[in-house]
Length: 339
Image (cartoon, rainbow, N blue to C red; front, side, top):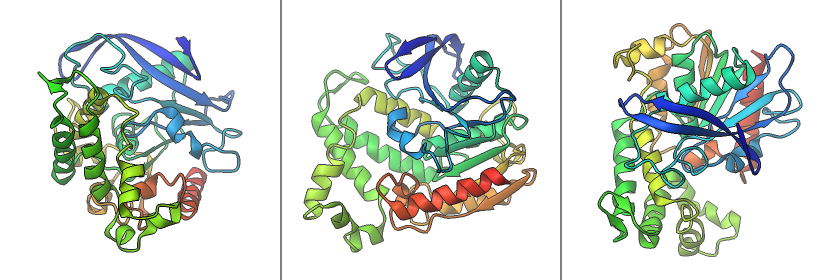
């Protein structure tokens, strides 16, 4: 464990991946909030979403809110490929191996057990790619996870979601800096194109129809796109973004020896209290996937579907500047933690 700025590193050593490759000296960056109780029964695991680092999602950790550090010991593990944990931008492994959520959760579990002696998790909470990790936690470690909240996430990457990501990749790799399977310079045009593709999918039809972006002070649609989406991903390394898109597209809780690709069997293995919280207007992690999953959660202690009633599309699940959606999520998670 090595201190780095406001986070720490778990040195996982050489890790055998699902792909068959061995990742040498793999590192998991993480940050903790609050105090671990003597009984070690107040643990919340809060994985990061696409391109996010812990600092991007810690706004949800507040006194008096659902993720209250006065009551819970909260761990944010940074997903591989986000620039803090092992990523193309910070290690010499080339080509960068194909990592899965299964690989990520396996190292996260090692962190909890080896570093803190944790054997029970009160809640795994995640949005988007974080929600997909929460699903993997619940399926792979049913004896460890008491509750899981999947916010704008799913048990596997659907074909529709896969196609969305193909569009994102195509926009990014059309930049001339993409050479021989790697970006050799910052793809300025590709990152802008990626943001423009994302803008159409991330928000809803109603969001644009009603010009909700004006509430944030944008003077017109082009101003909104230019100042919000053209720069949305420029702070991240493009090779890191591609690595995380690969993790996303490979996402499937059933793709492991335990379940042999049987998604119904994988979902039925879950015994936690499950809260599926899709965005009602999410355009690429579609609520209908969660509706289908709900009927398969036959062994969960409880399973509920509570869509976020918002026109903010996928971003309803990450409402940093959206009080109504934030209040809805806090109320739902607070209620879940009481069950």
